[in-house]
Image (cartoon, rainbow, N blue to C red; front, side):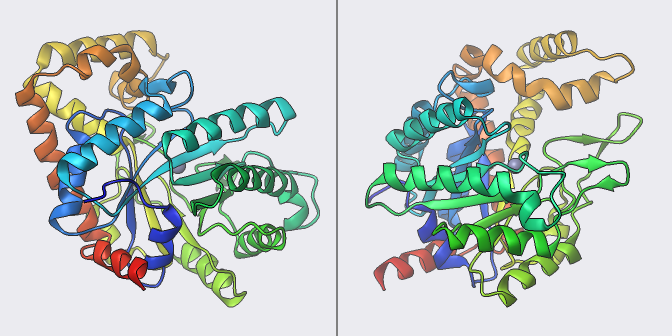
Amino acid sequence: MECNPLPGSVIFNALKDKNCIVMACNTRIIPGITKGIFRAAKDIDSAVMIELAKSESNLEGGYTGLTPADLSMRTCAAAREVGVDVWALHADHIGVKKGTIEELNSVKELITAQIDAGFTSFAIDASHLFNFDGKTAAEELAPNIAATIELARFIRSEVGNSEFGLEAEVGEIGRTDTSGMVLTTPDEAVAFIRSLNDSGVYPQVLAIANGSTHGNIFDENGNPIEQVTIDIPRTKEVANALRENDLDVRIAQHGITGTPRHLISEQFPHGDIIKGNVGTFWMNLVWDVLKEEEPDLYQKIWDWTVTKYAAEGTRDVEVFGKSSKFAVKEFFSELYSLDEGTVSVIEDRACEEASSFMRAFKSEGSAEIVREYMRS
Ligand SMILES: [Zn+2]
């Protein structure tokens, strides 16, 4: 069986009208997690994506300590071991924050390394580039559009004849102003995609700002809270506006860690949203297992994080929730040499949780749809 990653575009195009969401998992800690997710995918025959963002994995390792080549090698090994064939390796948040030539050149170096490592899907995120003096949506989005076009063309020129997945981002996820969360409007999404299409750039999925926040979230008293602020009506409006304008793109939902599974299952517009990113959740799962199985290591990770990232007036639980991601690289050798028993507890739990997410995303059987699409 071929267990190499498929082009992201094949998965997106096969599933775009099938009322399901493909889970994309940020596997910051690979032992146990990746195999568990793949086992779930195989059990219920679901397509799945594995991804890390530029901040998490770059040429220096990012905060997970994994270069694109490390991530690819370890993930492909897990795919072969489990025997999973319908998956893609996605570069999440290839962030562009300034849009300068130097920055774009360094981003291109990362993209080249990702392509060389076998990545099959790419998310260009230039949503920070926003012209606040613009009079129209197109003018406001012009710097984002320009950077997205340049990088998409670069990917096209580097991958040769291969197909690849492409995600673009309009509206910075989690951005707030004095009146609260800034949400992407249907007009912005349409203007953005139309400009990209006019330049020959056709993303299959679009990330929008629709009320979610990345990672673990807390109330004003520092208590962990669920992610229930995703604006479903707005998400549907954006998806409908794109359809009505004959723009062939669906929504990628970011920031799902902390979203109750029943809300995903009952309220998410499956088919409008076709990619669902579950990131921090998997790292939280490892911490939970370590707390029980390896309490001494857990305590070291906790102490290191709350000491290094302590902030006046912030409870330790919030400091740990927001900054323990930086402990992944610091404790890399411990995390990658865990006891076999601990890894197997992580793997079983990851499998169970991934399966539960996939059911909420209604993606059981989606792998077969992708296989049929490839045969036709
Ligand atoms: Zn994201």
